[in-house]
Length: 371
Image (cartoon, rainbow, N blue to C red; front, side):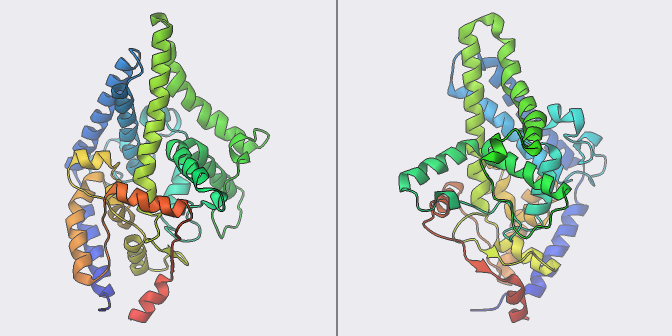
């Protein structure tokens, strides 16, 4: 089997990243605004119809409105538009979602500071390496009957944001603020969600959960009180179902990108640009790409390889980068993987169920051997 040309791999990806950055401009801002308008329209129509009766149309519209906020918040939070010429201040990492803007930009179960530390730093700087908090940890179901594991997978698919990820991020950020030395990700406990005697958990509820619950669920329901009990029940039911649908949608799109038996865990984080490129490609899988509608429905996670290679690029540039990246991997012999999202979810489920495990890979030694 031929040894990949890692010299050309690094050279071509570096040049492509510079080209994409230089090509960012007004088109990227207009593209972002179009996605933002989609999200606002979905939210408006979803809320406008949610009081009529519990129904899948309102649930779907509300869930897609949340997906738009998630896509925009994710990439703006990386600074993806900070260096785009003429970008409005509200689309920059310094301003987006900060302070009172959290309620108009990206209201979610977590605070921006927690997200940017755990996601931008721990995950992106340690993807598939020991400190990555996104590595699948299903040890709590090990040894349980298969039906229990299926129920656990369904539960986390529907609730991952508020039962797992937000408490984990709050704890990770608190450990950072305490100056704790870290060699592995924090292992979640039930107490991280419910122990209000813990100041970290109180902050999670007071700063993050209660404002989210008040704005997302209580406020819209209160607005339809004059319409009677049927409208109140319908609104609340649709809002809760939309939350569960959005959790499921994002979980199905996000977790299988990295968590599957055919994706390696790296023994250490990258130590060079070449190793960073290699880990970004080997530790990530893409889904089918092409077109704003398809990419929106995938939450732009169908460009996870591109996003890990260049996390601070605008959304539009990932669409432009994709065919070039595939060609570079093919020409240099570095494996690139792309597969349907539901097939990837099935592979992730096997990992969660404890039926298979992820292999370990020392990318430093791999590069040294090929030198």
